[in-house]
Amino acid sequence: MYNDFRGAAFRGTTTVAFKCVDGVVMATDTRATVLPGFIAHKKVKKVYQITRNVGMTIAGVPAEAINLLDILRANATLYQIQRRRIIPVKVVASLASLVLFSQRIFPYEVQIIIGGYDDEGYHLYSLDPFGSAIEDKIIATGSGSPVAYGVLESSYHDGISLEEGLVLAVKAINAAIKRNVFTGDDFDVATITMERGYIELSEEEKRRIFSKAVA
Image (cartoon, rainbow, N blue to C red; front, side, top):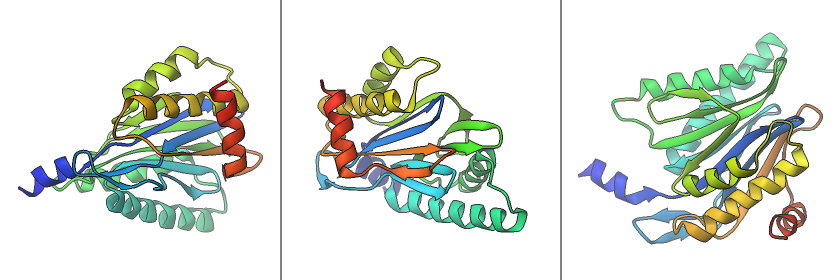
């Protein structure tokens, strides 16, 4: 009964992330749904900073995702203090994988994207509830991901710039908002670059990108 409740109670969300030549773009919607068809909240944060060079998007049960985020933040900070260097993105993804796998009997109902930069360049990983970690250039998660993937794969190309990527990410989220009932309300966008680190776009910046995305 507990598992049936969890399966029914938590669904929805669209998150996307992909690599550009000069950074990583992450974007999410902001709707939270509890029980089929009920909108619990219209402005939920789903993209987070782990360190200056690594960010994360969440889909699934928020409390479990935030618990995982806290574990990653604490360990990444400790790594950087002890070693006096930025933490490699693969190390963060590997730690998340270990935590998720260790809970496989009672798994975290989450799907996350971890991305950022390190000494070897930009990286992006998708992780499922059992800890499988897959590196890719383009990743979408959540119930709206089929719609988002359609937009991303039709326009993404090697060599895409960060500015182009911002517009593409918003197009993908906007398409999911229009076609997926569990995705909606608003969107958040973050970039991770070697020059500026993890940055979340302001409301003014988001509106500027949105106007380009729907033009």
